[in-house]
Length: 416
Ligand SMILES: Cc1cc2nc3c(=O)[nH]c(=O)nc-3n(C[C@H](O)[C@H](O)[C@H](O)COP(=O)(O)OP(=O)(O)OC[C@H]3O[C@@H](n4cnc5c(N)ncnc54)[C@H](O)[C@@H]3O)c2cc1C
Image (cartoon, rainbow, N blue to C red; front, top):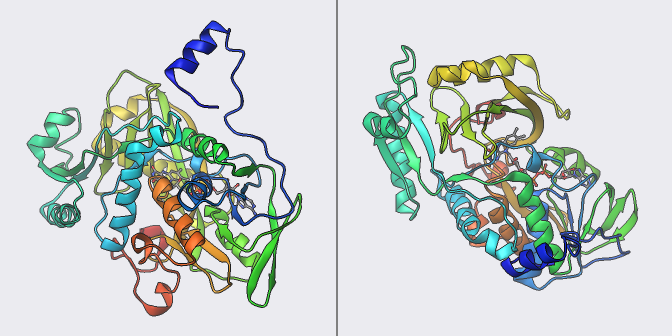
């Protein structure tokens, strides 16, 4: 069903009795033209763009639990496209452009809010690094503004500019960056895909693959065998486990990343702020809670819960730039499973098995990529080759050495 001003008026007059579910609860068919494994934002976006851009409608998105229950519903909702390397920049900027028209496109309110993302810098050397990144962005047609201390003071006068260890000297601002409501993004893509005929099958875990002659034939699931000549994996933190079912070993590790929400307060943080001398990012939700996070826990895990030392570390980083946060109580905390690649950049590509495609390696930052990732993955699956936009996000870059290491940190997930 579609949402419009007229439908709101009609339902108001009918006592809200005519609303139908935003997507069908589909039962799996024995065969599809294409299957996407994983009903997070990326999987649902892939289903949507396969139908919308490539005319494939006999397709299913299979989710082992409920849609959006993975990282999509667990992240800190930041969207931005402030990347340095061209191989990343063009995909994240494609994503940003899709965010800008997404709600109209999907006919769904995903609460996209371009409130600005400001990365703080604390030294001259860090300013130069940010200037380089901002210049690279502008050369690619992406907005970036380098602010000095006065510029940051105008936006956030309450920050601790004179912290003895990490004085704030300025920041790199992307005004088009911001936030989107994470679970509404999953629901919006489900709504849009369902309207185009895509089956969204929940409680359907993929437990194996049938592969013959080097080509994938279908998937074994907890709801029976389903045949398909094209199968895309978009299972984020479960990537290594699901790929292993097809005999693939990937350059990906699963790590826990935690998020925190404080009690609600009056408007304070009206954009997104990140600390440059540690790992801390914060925004404020529409309900008033400060939403923030920091580093991964640093050990491999498939458990969606975190450990105390990282809680302390995140709070310390927060206190370094905004001591006011120390007066707030944390209301909720949770963990998600991030798929850390060895260079910190994602993979959207074919695999050595014909008909099996891979979307993974999103590290800390796959939420912002949701529309762009789905768009590129749909193209790669439909045409059997990457689009120019995701042409650098190849799986074989780890064999050839053409890695995309934004931070120059090497193959060390906890540094990406
Ligand atoms: C705490 C936290 C904060 C984050 N903050 C940000 C942020 O601010 N900005 C940003 O850009 N990114 C952020 N991220 C990263 C971002 O959330 C992820 O990179 C992105 O959501 C991953 O893609 P996805 O949405 O498809 O994954 P998910 O939502 O995890 O979807 C994968 C789905 O696959 C399903 N699945 C797994 N195995 C199977 C199987 N065998 N069969 C069927 N289904 C299966 C899972 O149940 C899951 O629903 C954050 C992540 C976390 C954990």
